[in-house]
Length: 301
Image (cartoon, rainbow, N blue to C red; front, side, top):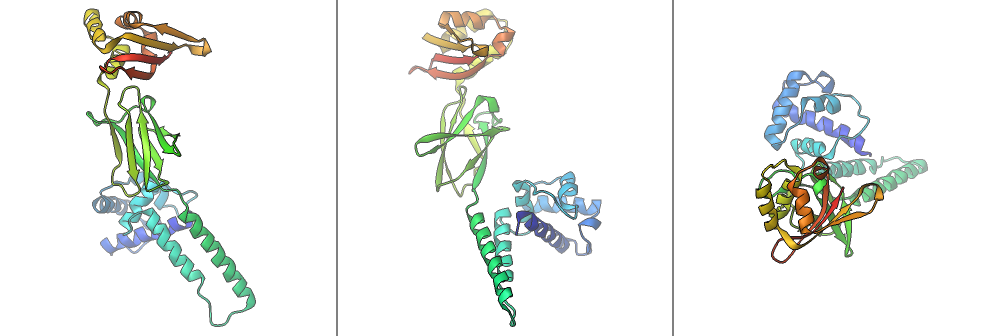
């Protein structure tokens, strides 16, 4: 049984759950009115503490047939509303029921019937085995530890450690989705503006966010490069405090034209007068010395 077919069963479970609260409703999704939709939205919110939109209901629940499976987070909400822990439990339990129904034999049977049942049993077992190997993933939002704001996707990279090798994890909308292969999966978060973070994620975890501690000097440097501060003297004094005497700056030029090198004095002079080209530069790497001052910067033009 496909997950799309199981979704049709879930839609019926949602209707049955709704009818327990509103027994006067005896229709189907086709006759589900706008008032019923508002009642359902409120019921889902009260029971699951999560929200579902009217548009989503019209798009995915009202149609008699669905051409594709909705997002898993929405399937989880509907499954929880229907009395399950989530979509995974709903799929598992309903596939179990389907399996039990398919292997029931009538009193009178013939050779062909046994062959058909054998095929059904084999395909169902194969489906269950395939489902058991389905990837277990967990999503986390990346946030600034102090402001609790989400972090720009361009400013951070995430990796998992597999066999002592780093495997990059895609980041979308400040969110990572980690595949949990072992009881504990190690995730490494790196950024030129935040302190390196290593997190061990267990398969059973209630956490849904990773908080990153900003590097104060790196954040100040970012502000200098992006802002329009006019007080040059103040900026010069502040730069002297956060940049190491032995600072090295590597700027990677566009169109593979090579690199430029700056020392502390040259780079400071460049930062004192903000320009449009300076604002467009992207910091790739920052290293601090033992005193905490910035001693190396790698920038992309």
